[in-house]
Image 1 (tube, rainbow, N blue to C red):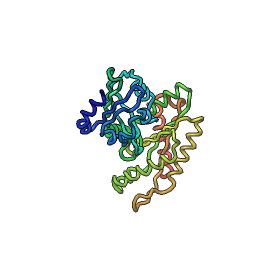
Image 2 (image 1 turned 90 degrees about the vertical axis):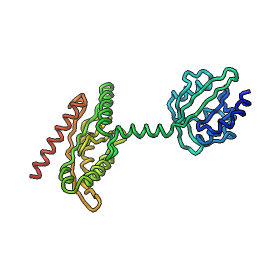
Image 3 (image 1 turned 30 degrees about the vertical axis):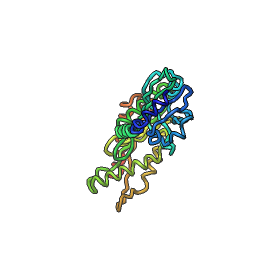
Image 4 (image 1 turned 180 degrees about the vertical axis):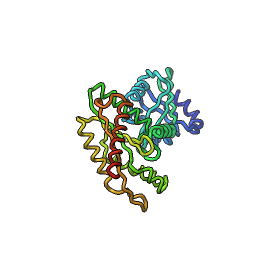
Length: 288
């Protein structure tokens, strides 16, 4: 019966941008419309008779697999849910499913709507909200969020971490002498050199202007932050080559250690900032 109805509707289904699928109680594709191949890359001949679960992206969160399991068991709680699928060409697509259970025919009728473009736009907007447009580093908002999470973890598990507050000496002079375009290129190059020193679980971000903040997580002792500070200073020994310009730039770096120098984000940043300005003052005195 269901097949005959679908045959009558074939012309209408073939015009739809969304894919219509029919799955039996065992989770096997019984029917897919023409749009299925456009969305997933598989023709009807390739999937009909095959298990639906075989095509779901295996890296998805457990709740996605639970939704599929509910669909296949006939105990679907939500008639609409999202998950990711692997296209035949290996690309991931985000799918919004609308599902109905047919008691009469003992099948699930599902409509697959491709929301990949929308998801990618959402991810891009989320990234832009948390990252500095110039350097690509986490911005102040994301830095504060990560710092607060590190503090919670350190307090809970009795761990140690450090903050490095970095200010670039003479940056204003570069902007005033060569223009903001050169200054922007310099900041981008500085961000790259700072990233080169970081471990995979550290966070380096731009607070604004020529100020950077580094969260050094999972440290065993304060001496480790001093070692990383030395590595950062070593990154600035080589000149910065910006088009035809060669610039010698150095940073002033202040360190705050949790929990000795502060136990809140405000306390730690303030301590590291003050330590940085003390070092900057010492550097100015040496030059004079």
